[in-house]
Length: 318
Image (tube, rainbow, N blue to C red; front, side, top):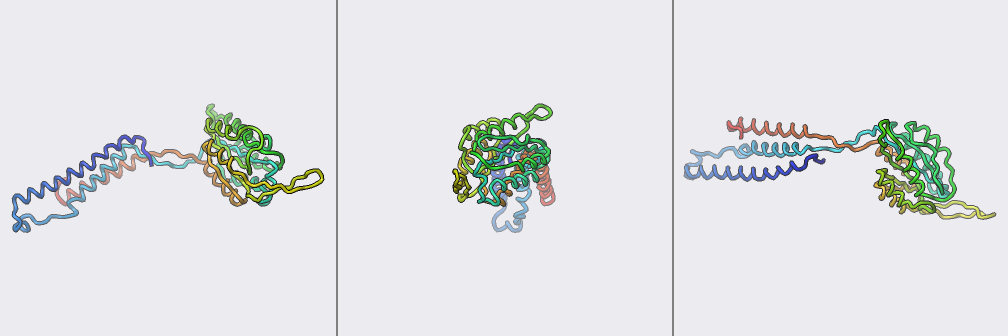
């Protein structure tokens, strides 16, 4: 919970002073009673009054004042609401290492299935595009609300070539930054980038991530694979096995620099779970909902309770 006008909370310092005054007043009353009634006659002349009931109205009033002061500060709570218009670019690595079968049936096919999970769960109000990259990026589908187009484009993925993460980020940011709503305002966008290793060619991924952050386009990176991945590579007449272990460090940097978040998945189930989470997260935004009326109502109820108890038990307001 937060407050739109937190300066009003300074008034809470008056409550300890009020409690101090109340306790001093109670001591004054006891001294006044002792001055006119001797101890042997106290039980008959000034019998012991109600104990907890004497203070209950004041406690209710102090609590009421605290709640009313909080209401004056305009309390707010964060709530998640569906995004009315936004864009997400799915960016998939299709370099040679994505053919590794350490993630069944292969890293590339697992990425394709996870992207389908994302498309199934993301709200229809979100525009989704698809970009793939190896040594160069290739835009397969611009961001649109018809998610079936991106789903169809996923069937074209084939692994091969090197890895240019920076170029892929720059290309996806250019597409997202060019999207405009009906009034000409830029549509909020985000990138979901899946890869299994560090960039081996092209622009600096870190520099691309900083540019994305400057445009308020967060990048959510997903590192897919294990340390035991291998692929078959032909060298002339021979076919050799080449290790392609997961390298997630650079992807983590890209996510951090762009104000996004980094994920790691070692199997197809974990990858689908990550994409399902991202679909829900990116399909909603957090807004501030003011709850001043609730606080004010609670404060008034406490004040009425305190006053009613005092009138019933002692015939006075406080």
